[in-house]
Structure formats: C-alpha cells, structure tokens
Image (cartoon, rainbow, N blue to C red; front, side, top):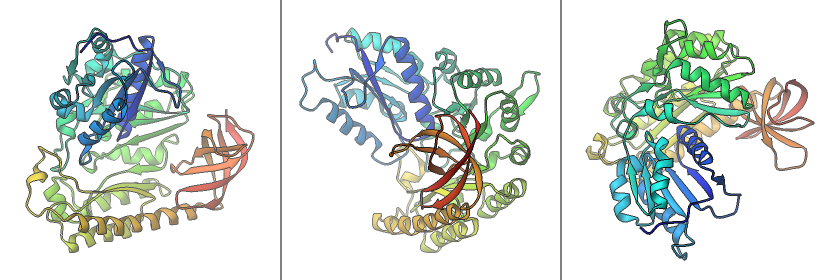
Length: 446
C-alpha cells in the first residue's frame, strides 16, 4: 500500500456482545490518545474500525460487505483507512488481508492495545496483522478511562475453557483468564470519578472470575462485587454472562445481601433437552439448571431471570424442542435471547450428523420467541403500580421526556425535571412489550 495521510477522525463500529462494546470503547480511548477525534454523526471518518463478532453464521461475509460499502465509488484518497478488529479478525486475519486489499490493519481482541503502533505502520503504507493473545498484557497497556455515561462496562474475565461444541469463543478469545483484583478496583474508581453510577461486570464466563483481594484472601466474583459495593458513588452493580457450572454459593447469597447488586440474572441454558445439552457439551441438565434458578429466587424473590436459547442444534427432534418450550413455561423469563443454530467452522457441531433444515429452524424460533415475548410482557405488566428507582440514561424522543432503567433492566420512560445520571423514584403507570411508562416521584441521588 502507498503511504497514507494520517487520519484525524475515527469511528469504531462494534458488533455482537457487550464485551465487544467495552473493547470498542477502549479502542476509541487509544485513538483519542493518538490525537484523533470521533467523527461527528453523519460524517465520514478518516479511520473506520470494524470491531467484529464471530458467533453468527456468515459473520466474515458481512465484514466484506461493510468493507465494500466503505470503499465503493471512492478513490483511494477519499476512502477511509480500514481496520478489522475483534473475533473475526482473530479467526480469519490472513484471509481478510488476502481478500480485502483496502484493509490496512487486522487486530485480534487480545492485541488491540497495539493499535497505535499498527496505525503508524499503516500511515507509512505497511499493512499489519496482530492476532497474538496476551490478555493481561493488553489490559496493562490500555490508557486511563475517560468520561463515561451513567452506565459503564468493566471487563473482569476473558476467554472460555468450556468448549461448547457450537461455540468459537475458546478459539477466538483464548483460555479463561481473570484480571487482577486491584486493577479492577482501580478501573472502577476511575469510572465512578468519570460519572458512572452503574457498572456491569463482563466476561465470557464472568462468574469464573477469581483473584486475591487487597488482604491477600482468595475471592470469587461475589467477593469482588462486595468490594465494589463499598465504593462511594457506585449505586448499581450488574454482571453478565454467567455459566451454570461456575455458580458458587456465595454469589447466590450476594443477591440477597448486597443492596447494590441489581435483581437481574442472565444465565444461559441453551436447551431444555438433556440429550441436546450433552451434545452441546454444556455439562449441566435441565433439572440442575432449574434447581439453580430456584436457589436464586429463594435468595432474591423479586429477581428477574434472563437466558439464551439455541434452536435447531444438530439432531434436535421436535420432542426435544418441546422440552425447551416446557422449560420456558416453567421459568417464565423476564427477558431472553434466542438464535437459530449456525455452524461455525472448526467447531465439533459443524460436522455433526442431523443438521436441521432452515425452514424447521425458522418455525421453531418463531414459536420459541412467541413464548418469550408472552412472558416478557407478563413480567412488565406485573410491575404496573409498583414504585422503583430508575437510573436516567438518556433523553427521550419528545421534549421533556427521559429514558432510564429499572432495577430489573427494563426501559422506563417518563417526563420530569431531571438530569442525566440521576437516580429517581418512579411509579410504573403502564407496560408495553418492551418498555414501561412511569410517573416521576422524586430524585433519589444526583
């Protein structure tokens, strides 16, 4: 490639999970440190970072489509410099460099702290690929946190050792690692100083986090949460995504004992069929999962439950799918995420017999999502008449309207004289399938 004019503006487009959102924010902070500024909304950026997700089928092809849209009809002088980051970059870096000459940089999710050096090379006309996986080194090299919104993500754990047969995460994010306790407390303090009232702890298996606290005692995620709860200015704590096999007694207890830990649990199950779960290498059963949820409800009776489901896993019969529907009927989720199975290259499930026809998966997904929508609407309607705290996150569409989140992660809108970041008391007056209408009572914290 020819030498390029140093970019002045950038845009990071993140796809997929909340951890990608966190990574995208951190890449933006790295670019800020190089003197670049975010491109104004609606204007072209000099540098575009495509922060990719590899979970869904055809993820790589969508990246090539995005690259095409960025360069179509433009001369090389006017086209933006393009970097591909994230899990697709990790899995298919060499292929991207071969197929997409317009791409200047390919950087994996554990190496993006080297983005400034790669940018220097790109300006000189050198294409660069870095898919090394030194996770802790990445965090040690990232800049101090900048001003945040009232809510913030904090990655505490990365990677996965579970090797579910459908999942590419162990290959793109690497083995499970936990960030040091003192690093997390320090980053949380910076986020609070920058205005964060709520922090969501992130990890591929976030409840696998472990470390030593400031007194040298071995602690798990519950211990970290209890320490964070003592920080002045932090009002709410959440965490995601958990694995049933890493759920410890003290974390369940924390839901009933730590006021700042919000009454919301996202715990994926994927299927209600034990045979399918075994084929997925999930290492839990439908019964053990349900008993785990019972323990959470015992510790925190008002807890809202969320889950993940995959329909059409290879070999799934209609009867096994009905077992999943039965599990949903028993749990009555407040929210859930559901997907059709998509074969990921290199995973064991991709070569299993009994791949399900697309039209069968479509039908099953629609039926499953109808159950989930039914229960989500019922959960929302059950909050009408209740009073709860709402964290103000942004302005609404109409003058004087504000949007925030309830403790159960529901979107709540109302009108009133409040500010971004306020935590207010509101009475829930109406419920829709996806949001609540509230009446402002009084500010709680500012």
